[in-house]
Image 1 (cartoon, rainbow, N blue to C red):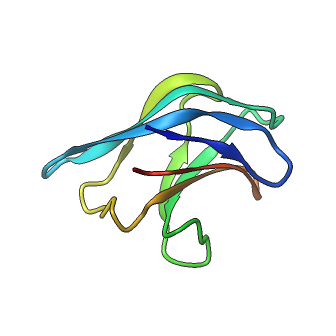
Image 2: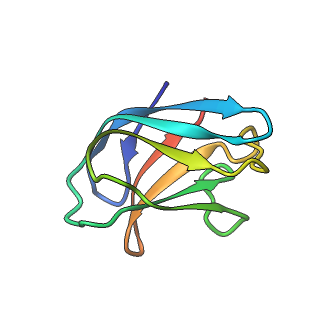
Length: 100
């Protein structure tokens, strides 16, 4: 599991793990996720080295803003290429975690 770190002055903590299911996709497992961002709606996207200007995979709105939960990703996602997860509140990047 990899640890979250905050971005743009925000504190974001917790860890993330990945489970790949051949032909189906997989899940990102958020564990003990927390942030100080004041938002009821957080979105996540997979990036290449954390670069939002390159190709990304939009994972949509997180089902929770804290705690432990899973977020699926599509079957055609090369998780070795999309190696950094970014969490955003609106247009502000609040946290990131490297997918290991």
